[in-house]
Amino acid sequence: MKKLLLCAFVALPVLAPKSNAAPTRKVVIAKSNSKTKVNWRASFPAALAEAKRTGRPIFVDFFTTWCGPCKYLDAVTYKDPRFVAESKNWIMVKVDAEKNKANVQLAQKYKVEGYPSMVFLKPGGKESSRVVGGYPPEMLVPEMKKAAIKAAGATRI
Image (tube, rainbow, N blue to C red; front, top):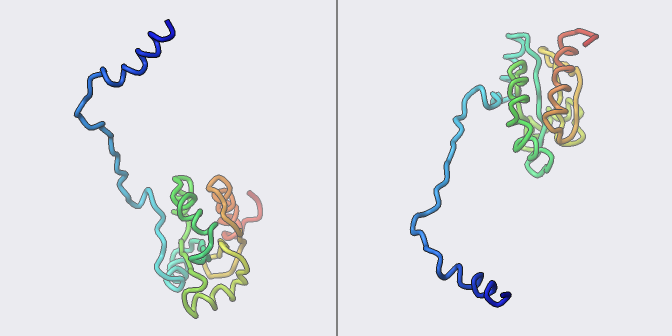
């Protein structure tokens, strides 16, 4: 009996009908629009001017190209729908802290010592608070909400 079962298992792949049809896969392509991604401003001076004009606070991501947690933010946190939704309340700007002299000076002005550093600014450019590190969205979004209240001048949540 054991030999019969063994023969059946060995012969099964040989005797089974083969299909020439390729396996089908459903491909879904997500469209990128303003509701699904962050509107990063091109430069800090432009972000500051817009914040002064609109009265919205500024979210500054000081990053470097070699920083692992910075890459995590780009790959995970900044694509999360909760983060994208909260970013609509902010003027968002990314600053490569080592790219050029102006960026290095900006990082020095805000006393950035580690990467990534997310510095929350009042509309006039004064720091209200900051967080440092590769925060997941469920931790960073509440920090942003607290910082927005603080930037607006409120003392209680």
